[in-house]
Image 1 (spheres, helix red, strand yellow):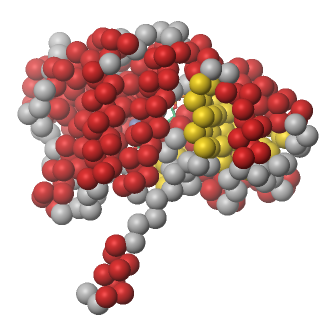
Image 2 (tube, rainbow, N blue to C red):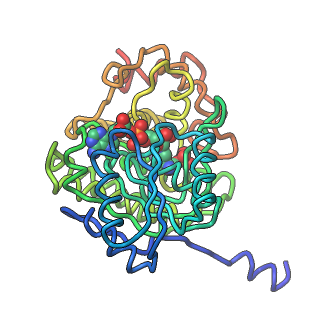
Length: 357
Ligand SMILES: NC(=O)C1=CN([C@@H]2O[C@H](COP(=O)(O)OP(=O)(O)OC[C@H]3O[C@@H](n4cnc5c(N)ncnc54)[C@H](O)[C@@H]3O)[C@@H](O)[C@H]2O)C=CC1
Ligand SMILES: O=C(CO)COP(=O)(O)O
Ligand SMILES: [Zn+2]
């Protein structure tokens, strides 16, 4: 390797949000954040049908009152078709920036559309259901496949704890499952580094593990309708997002437990929430790692997040099918699943961890 190649190998480009505003009533700060980012006019808000009433209209009116031209588009599905629709409207109107106001789907659609037309994107989550509210990844369905696509990180994240505390508690508990899943994601990453010398970031891994551990240690403080709980979870989601930005991939926050969740999304007739499935996946994968799966299960139970097939609302047979399928989801990402579980091994791990009974 010559010197130039060696220097290029060392190059690191991390994209992080510039403004992260978390707290009671901070939805009213959207206009201030825009002023800080010098986004003065011509916004497009992507929101959901119900989240429009919860937050979309507030953001629209507040930006309009501050003298901006603002358009709004209601989008219910995180699909390529929706990304195209948003991109088209944004280009026709010559918008300066996009805002995703709502849950995971609205944020992903706005994030990817903004990336494609190279304009800034602001994330205004109404729920803390997973770390996609902060990260540079967008999960988008194309036909019958869902792809996790690299996008630009939000320029700003504005998380109003008052609004998020009013969201169904299930969404917050799901966010906790997504954070706790960092435990096995990092173990998988370390394993892949030892076996395959994949690029590894000590800083990203340490931040990701520490974030999960803080939440596990504070599990008994996570309660419905408490803004302090929301604040704790949002801060953890921000940390997870930062860990992914440092790594330049979702490795610190997505390992075998996420592959299990992605597999469930494929096989279950009605999948549960992303973070709920990842939480149960973490119990299963921690067992395979020979780690302390019981403390993962305990923490999820204290939070009141699902720990079994029954609590996920998914039949046992789909859990077993997903377990056997998991290693095929992202073959380039080596994990504890190795070349896969046999059906009888899948049944043993699911029974031993009480995921099925
Ligand atoms: N970009 C990424 O890295 C990631 C993206 N995803 C994607 O995100 C999507 C799932 O996101 P979720 O937020 O879990 O679900 P979701 O976007 O389907 O929203 C769940 C429900 O919560 C409702 N909701 C949201 N805020 C509310 C509030 N304040 N009050 C009342 N109801 C409220 C929504 O209207 C919706 O019906 C999927 O498309 C998934 O693939 C999942 C994980 C990571
Ligand atoms: O959900 C994520 C991290 O929590 C993103 O991971 P994926 O790369 O598996 O979509
Ligand atoms: Zn996740």
